[in-house]
Length: 322
View 1 (cartoon, rainbow, N blue to C red):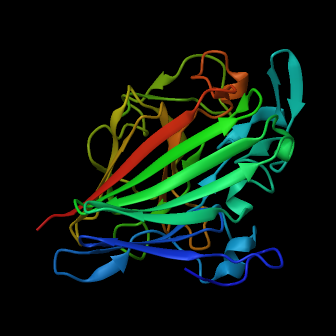
View 2: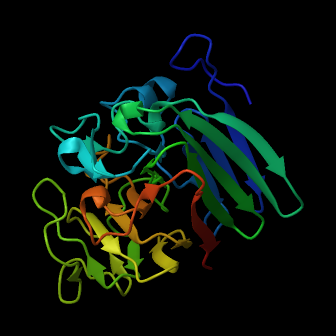
């Protein structure tokens, strides 16, 4: 479980490999990052189906690393003008996207080295990572203790379990920012995508929600309610989910690999990776909170109070079609 030296002197980044059934998963404690998910295709050839960078230095370099595989927090997605009001007090967050706040700030959870332990049972193996975010971290109030557990079972399921507590009222919304490519290489353009969502949040030119309700996808280029090739058009949208359950399906017909994503979260961010090191090398499917939820009175709340426990669960189920 040892690995390369971390970003701070004396800090070690650990690499943990989980194996169960036909799947092998590699995670790092830097950013609680999902580095590899290796699975076979219909003829047995094994490939990694998430984008990864060549080494730790690449993950540390923000110019090369668009949150690839990382755990994003304390609040994923954007906060307009990097401000929000909580109990009458205005909080100013780190401005790392022009005048706005994105994915937890310049020194968000994706830039930290988490503490890890491994648990094993007859049915599954898990890497459980913990991070303490101090009061005032990136402008957020309250000390937050966050946990993400990568759980892999013999039925071909990789689950992300999130948990957090706080010492003062604050915001919490965690997600994983893996870029999936079931072909194991090339672009995702020919892969089939299904999204179990009837509505999408309308965005302005800065990818922040416009006023008004979510809009139906029916009759638009964002209607993926039936399996459809991703194609070459850019995707960077937030789809509203009707409730807990199946959110998305991704299929690579040539290899036979298939992934089903289920979650208890209110929405799914879908990004076709046009800004990746290799454009469109992977598709991000980020289950989590609404963008700019702290400033949207009608969005599902992202508030966490002392005595409460933030919980989130997203499951990726893998199979190979003959």
